Length: 614
Image 1 (cartoon, rainbow, N blue to C red):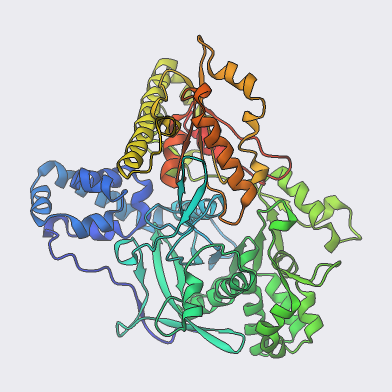
Image 2 (cartoon, rainbow, N blue to C red):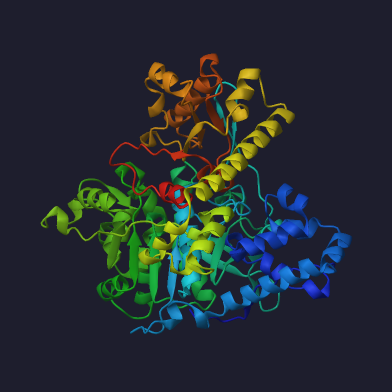
């Protein structure tokens, strides 16, 4: 479907912005600022107090800042100089003529990648992610922007996000859902040319769901997010945009139809014609069904459409445990897909064969993705071995090592995760644009110029910042009346010491990640923690899925340990783990701990983020 109407995205008016700094809102609505230290400094200098109280959300800050403060800063020559330099950097960055991609000679000059994912972790002002998959997707979009890759991303908006975590004095986790305000976030609605809201229709069985579209600009890469929470839909459809990873299987099926089939339809309405569709995990695999439907409608047979589809679809699997791959019963699929297989001109059995495992009557999203893609990859060497073994049943006549799933190890977006203080040290050794060549091994040899004392001094400063952040969070909880006792206050990290070796463990509290492994032999651990000459302390942080009772039990064990008198403040839990908390811990702890149950950890990128920070 070609674009039939002019589409537009309009930045709201901020009438109090002085003319000589008029483009500040443009920068605020492009998440490029989130990994550009200079741009972050621009907003911090605008109003330091608002910058902190709004959790580094420049859009909300511009909505709340006093007009006289704006006028004062606009008249400040130092602020004006910083604004001019950031604007110059921003314009140069957005000019695709100077990117890595633009300087290559490609056999296929009109490449366009559409990247589908259920969640994107870009910044805390957009709480639409739960963990590693979303952060990896956010980092991928940022890196694609830096390289100048022609890419557009597609996902869904979740007005209540994942959840905020409240942990009681007994370690009980309470999941708190709060709606985030789209009007105060760096996100804009996509409109028709006449200014009305763009709506796209997607079939859900015998119903039609209307989808509104939002755009998040991540440097050069737009992310389009689909939203069903609009008045055109009945309440049961509006709620599909409420929460990420709801436990109800029917809700998950509907959400994944919207992500996959709806995502393709949104791209078509927007006039996007990708040459490659990249499915980041199986949640988006129904995109392949929509692409098949398009081809059959255009006159191709089902088999012709399937072969041509495979040339344009690629798939990344992240989950090394079979139970973590979404499957739906046939009766549920039948309700939503009978009209689709009739359009495709195939029987019920032929359609179900696209996603049917050899040994059971279920429809597997991962198998659908594997059977419709030309290439599939796991996210580490070990995960590749596990995935080939896991899905060998689809290629029973081939040796396990020939199962067509390769390994491409996950990475992290360096400018996002490195501390500003260490980035400054690296720049001094490797030059001002070192991060553009950070994959050049020879460049890192220049780091030998850096003295141990300089590196250690910087690390100690970052450790102090982290401990200050931990104490601030404890103080906030105390002021809110959330502290039950002195022991509880201590377990929040108020007695953590800068001169004590600090171990950090922060991630989702899935049982296979074994958060409590280090607590198994408590007597031995206490001797280590309380060694008078070489003491140790441990900081934990992480959320258990609201339906994961074993994960919540691990959380209770940690709190019980931290509040016990014998531990004496050497074990702390920082509640409500998110990207903001992660940044402080990754840059501040001395040792990063990761001890999953082999081989259930697919990649483990948090260790890469920690190593960036020494």
